[in-house]
Amino acid sequence: MREEAATDALRGRSVLISGTSVAGPALAYWLTAYGCSVTLVEKAPALRRGGFAVDLRGSAHRTVLRRMGLWEEVRARQTHMGAQCFLGPDGREQARLSSEFMSGDVEIFRGDLSEILYEHTRDRAEYVFGDSIAVLEQTPDAVHVTFEHGAPRTFDLVVGADGLHSNVRRLVFGDEPHHLRFLGHYVAVYDAPNHLGLDRCAQWFNAPGRALCLGHYGGDPATCLVTMVFAEPDPGHARLGGDRQRALLAERYAGLGWEVPRALKALQEADDVYFDAMAQVRVDRFSEGRVVLLGDAGYGATMGGLGTGLALVCAYVLAGELAMRAGHHRGALAAYEERIRAYALGCQKNADSAGRMLAPATARGIRGRNLAYRVLQLPVLAGYFSRLSVRAAENIDLEDYSAALHDARSSRSRE
Image 1 (tube, rainbow, N blue to C red):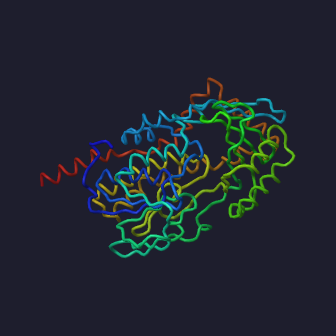
Image 2: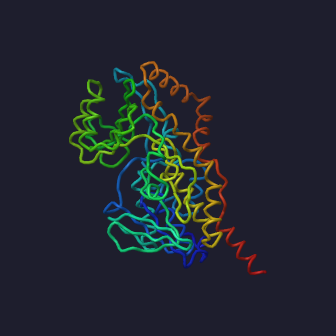
Image 3: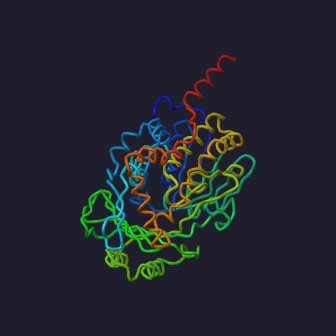
């Protein structure tokens, strides 16, 4: 923790955060630095390891991590991912994108970033695993929380940082179908044997409406990560059981060449398969009374929405606005929304075409996408498109809350 950021601005205030991926622990880092009592609750029995490799890019992401004193630690655990190649039907390379374009300034496994944040907050915040929120009852002065397993407790504020399928959002803002915009694609991810001997690189294979990527991002050289993206108009498949999801994937990818048969065999043998709809969260407001949404719970976008960096930046803003107002939630939550709404929606917009670009609907579309990627890598254009790729991530003016808090306290002491 940077000592100059530490204040007692939130001493005596208590906050419950639902979710321990990235947004929740990042918020806990700042709230505890401001003197707040923080509890994080997570339905999983332990911290979730592994997961996607996520990229951090642009000045806003770097600035927040540097103010946390974590930039060098994050860089030390980056994947060092190389180029990603896009193959034709015969398995030959048709296009490639550089690591700078695909991985940003730093690429790190989501689980590694989560672990870093956890290690820097575990002694300052209370972590409760294997439980979740069952009921939230708001009064003018507090939020009374009933848990699935633990004893009821009362907090000044509750934060939903529990992902795209947020339990807090459901309890306070209404059922999920009202807030998820389905993007017409699904994504599945699982581990498989690294038959191609890939080393920190990835290869994408396409058929109309389907993509399959084999990637090695570091770690065990015998294992690679399989990513499937496919077009599907039915938004209900995410609610299927695991066996039916595997059967659906096997059906959609049956008969394809390259490494697809091996990938389908590994699918049936995989211990853990991530499967979800590609969707965006759309809510009219990010807070209701003393409950506020953070990260994917409020403005998630599945793939391509810069969600991890967005969560870090917005956690910094939320904690800072609360500290500036000594925990008075109405003004703080209004200021948080005003500062980050346009930024969050701009990052979401980045993801609008992710499914269509990864899994074009036609053979002509695949050829056109590959041509576009080849053009992007021409020296005359590479710099321009690299800057374009970080524009949404940088589209926010970050307040230096430690300086602002110091100025506010100095002003009060002179009155």
